[in-house]
Length: 324
Length: 251
Image 1 (cartoon, rainbow over the protein chains, first blue to last red):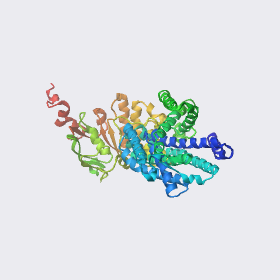
Image 2 (image 1 turned 45 degrees about the vertical axis):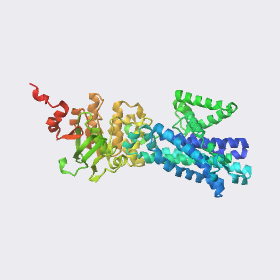
Image 3 (image 1 turned 90 degrees about the vertical axis):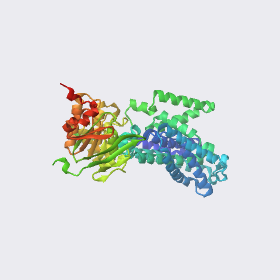
């Protein structure tokens, strides 16, 4: 099975990277891994559940502030806050889903953004506890020797991305996955064949929030300072939408390719300051017009391959029965 | 055994639905025996689809009750009714166009049928075979013809393991030959023991399957009985032809 060999080889390269890679390479891969996790979560929502959110930064921010409170105020090991940040984000997503799932399409999208903005403004208000507009630093990270801290960060990022990708593949290959894709294609049709549409969407929404929350905590472990305008910035949503649209929405492979292209482009355009955002936007629009299924869509049109097969085929035993 | 001696599998008791001041369905009651085929006729806007949607759980009645297998189903959402065996097909087919025909039917077997693993696959396969889509199992559902989409609606409904199948104008928009194929398919489903309620404007197709008709006009039940009784009733003629019964004026 070449597919398993490719994945195993990739895993081995990543696992051993701290042994042979430079600090710069290691930090770049961490960035790749957390953007990949964010993109995988958004892709599950928009590409599979038809839930187009432009407010996932709410959970990045919640994860970041969970890190601050748990590590600074409660004295937990910052790295152990990652799963807790995921739980906090999922917990916050539950009441949000009660509000949001009453809305459809564009109304849903705008409402997700409104929730994120409300949280940003709330964190900006001068609540001393959260540091107001200037935010707070995760000082306890200073207690780690730098090399050790970067190695733990690396493996934490690797674990998060692995959970995001494996969780997405597992979810989509399950009965829930077919239900999700059915909802995306026709919600009345999905209801008519017995799919519990609201419960299915909520399950995915909470999973995406958990992944995004853990990614938020991880991002601010690498950045140390948590400021509300940065943590709840709509840029998180914009970058992630760009990644998924470029790579191929509604595929597992798409966000991986999209993240690579996004980081390469950002590196190449880093000298252009604000212009780079304009170029990102133009590229995304061009992709939507001329290749709406993204780069992975172009690849699968030409070659029938899948690195992470999630589609179902009629079992061969039925086909043989028909021909004999 | 004549159907009316069995306890009903489905019963509508005083079903009423209003939207503001407009009452779309008004105090409609009827029963459906296990394995029976019941047709619903009525002019456009008579409330037929709304009635069907109250039975399937898409629309909540303003008043009245739905009893399924003797138990009140009024509080059950659509997905739960589907799993219990009360399954509806849509007037406008709702294929999951990004999924294949196989995946469409498997989704129904897993969710509506409540089946797992090989059982679900077997049910999906049987449903595809019965509805004549087996050769197209790998086709994306979005590429099916209109007749193919109608077959897919039936295939998915069958995969849910229905006791009662609610058909909403499933023959609409098809050619005569296609209607014949569909009628044969629906008759086969009915003879296999599935009770059917079928809304249809194509009367000859409808009465070649159903043994009993009800007719609605302005949301009210205006006639019920055998197809001949209903089609010949004054109420039914008035609903379709106006107050002057034209047949009596003919030489």
